[in-house]
Image 1 (cartoon, rainbow, N blue to C red):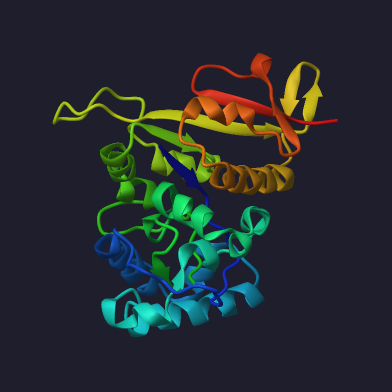
Image 2 (spheres, rainbow, N blue to C red):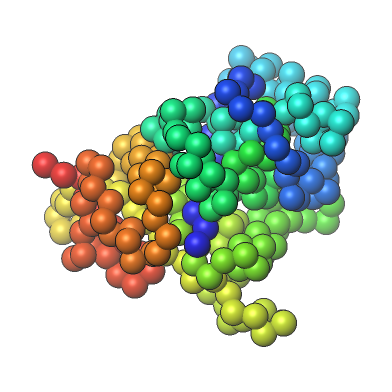
Length: 263
């Protein structure tokens, strides 16, 4: 079983623990980096769709990648583990720095972060700050955007190492990570992993579940932490989550678990 989550736009370099490995898709990440660095600053700001202040910060990140692709063996000690490099609501709720050694080991073995730059990141893969959303229309080689660049390679990698993918990613990132999941087995005849998506809702209005993005992000982080602390090893156990939310059978369906806020 593997869990996939989205990255965050906000990134930091401080970490209580060192990076232990380089990203598995380093070669592809270098291609993405080269494509981003080949743009001029004005083109990059349009790609990012951000303010001048954020663009200036992101340009500093680009400068580091342009000088030399940072994810190299000689630079490992200077890189930040992916689990600690992102600092959005989801990661604040997960609060990895306060997890036990056993819980961190659980995540090291099971958690993957979907990234437009790096594809799939393990918790202790070393990275440097960057700004690049999966939905950004960055042409990489002959590929018109990042979805086409990554294709179904991410889901093939997931299927090679597990039989169940627990999807906690946003639609933007799930689209990339799960591309090809609705097709039959690959050319080798190998079975593809089944997908279990989890959604967190604040209530029901007019018969439809209501989701609020900030609360959903926090809930995903709490869910990952709960799984790590509880040692969840069977998808059937996922419905036991009770940290502020309860499983809602009436809103769930095969392959899609719904949770409603308690109270």
